[in-house]
Image (cartoon, rainbow, N blue to C red):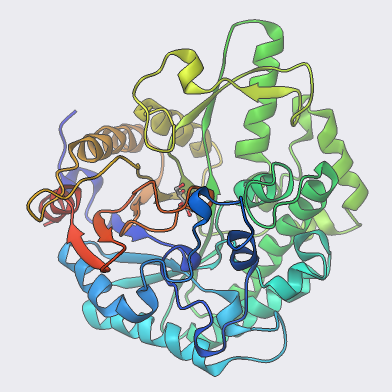
Length: 444
Ligand code: GCO
């Protein structure tokens, strides 16, 4: 399908997304305290090549240049996250003015350039000191997180109207608490259940704080979503795919929509959640978000597993299925998955903004340019599936690219490059890739 910008509608929002820990650097600057990601990345063996984001893209100092590049590519929206450790270095209580000042500078630069600032309150960099008190597994985090929300929204609420509570609860709960591949590196199903429940509670409560503090706020929260397919037509594989769908796509959104936990799906383990649920929690988890942030990269093919890595279901990795079209993350390029997951989420009847979509491919600088053809094709194919779902009536009102520039890709370190802008990490030189130029033309 060929398409142009106007096919998406006049008010459709075009943006790019980033996250504090992945780009800012300035690890100890101006009173910032360590986050769980500082600790985790400095623990030997956790990150490819033992890399860390102490410097990353040095966005902390180079934001004027980077935001100017973003504007040059003709986007309207800059999605970024607020580092809790810069604003409340002790997690709660003492406010660090220098941290607030930094985000004021970033926000003011956006406004000066005519970019809309869209902050996310939590993109995984929990203060280490709060982790030491149990982090997401401690129910007190609901009040810690609402305090952080309160400080941020009172401070920035007159300039910033678009807010997102979480980035991808499923990822930081599963990878951080069961698989142990992300900070804080826990491997416990019980901790995962506890953390998930406190995340769902915080989600609703934080939404209410924003609503109370910010006049005319437009409030959302984001979810990592993946269409799930069964590996075979056998009953057991079909059931496994259903359970995986619940874990990946339903567990964190349905409580927010007032539907409670999705216990209707034959995933017995989910009933454990009741252990942590107190009277009134179901109501507290619900909040009338203005939009859902949907983030999609690939799909998952699932089959029944005899042992429970989690939930008696396991992924059949693309390589094992003979898929050759893989990104540098080893993910299958599957544009139809975007369409399918949008149709699934469309059934919730809420406004959707695609708050992340993108791909990592090997990039090379040739005579000062980066010819990333594969990435351009990826965007064309995914965008045409977005358009198809939109034309069939799914209420999609924006699309944000992951990501502005190459950055620290969590456990994978700096190897995968997702940016529209190439970074030379030795010199911090920025080069707009051909994909950035493609958007520049497309959005002109
Ligand atoms: C996520 C995060 C990003 C990642 C991106 C690529 O969606 O996991 O929001 O921080 O870098 O998704 O993996």
